[in-house]
Figure 1 (cartoon, rainbow, N blue to C red):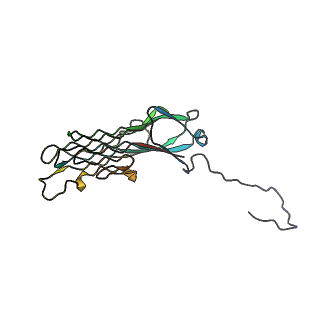
Figure 2: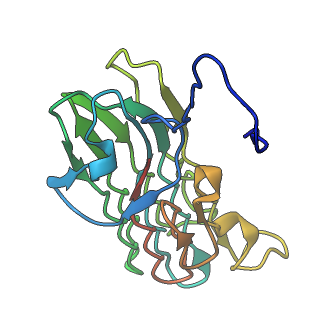
Length: 233
């Protein structure tokens, strides 16, 4: 701002301009939703303005790893899909309903396959934003195991909203058995699928973060990671 020196005179009008950030000008706050079924989320006061924008990152849950009989390793679970949406607030609609996907169950040593991860979704203004869960890993009870599990693909946009980005889930790893050369029973092929955007990482055993698939076990498998919803505004 210019400084007027003593004795200076100003003729005409002085105009002072104030610059403020408008609603939806950027995302500087974040909320994490880690559980809930048919639950309701109320938008923060800063978003209760028509035309404001918020960002949703929706993560489906990971599938569980398959179990195996003695001397083999089960197939790992796939990771959940990730959906990202930029949503514009509609005047008077300041809540949304949501579901956070439950982790896929671990396969037993009987053996059984791992369970599929649950889908996570948000419904706002009658539009559904969905992220499917990952597939469960197959059990391994014969030489060479069974077909590998695949991560769930991104959902299909049926809303007509173009501000959506989809990331498919990562595939689960293959199983192994004693007859596969010198490959160890606990090998890289039994790693669970990792989640897009590095939101979850698959391992040989219990996954890290959100949405990743569980590892295949040499007896029981490992459960997948749960889903997640991130709200930024």
